Image 1: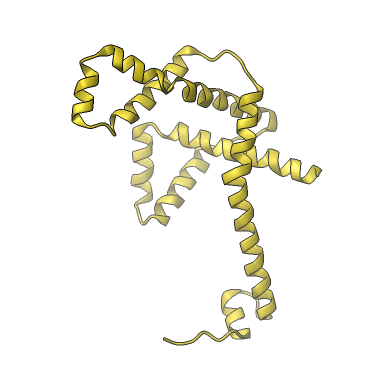
Image 2: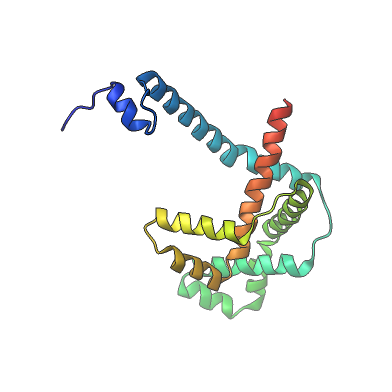
Length: 187
């Protein structure tokens, strides 16, 4: 195993296109990248979820029952996929148990639907839009990262009806980032 030399040649390899690259420049670039990754982690793991939760708690409004019901049904179906055959048989034979299990998802469903409406309103207010092309590019990029056929991955998402959910997640990400960035600039 060859030992890597920490010198100007390494800096030039790591910073392509800059013939004047130095180790100090490389160290600075690595430091900046690490800070950006840390900031990104903070945004995605703490700041965005906390901001959205603040909005969800702050704004109460009537939710369309059929949308909440759909969300509960999706959660119930997801839960059913993790249940054993015995559990499924038991629950199918007793509609009261189905309803009881379904009701356990109501609070999360209402929170999710409320968050979606809030994000949609914020996106309109902030002028945030995610086009179908952006969704396609994101899916293609992710598929390529995973070594998958991008066109097949996109078709699978499209056929499964996941494109609107992906688009909404991208809108949420963009709008919350924009709001947080504006707050940071104001500070």
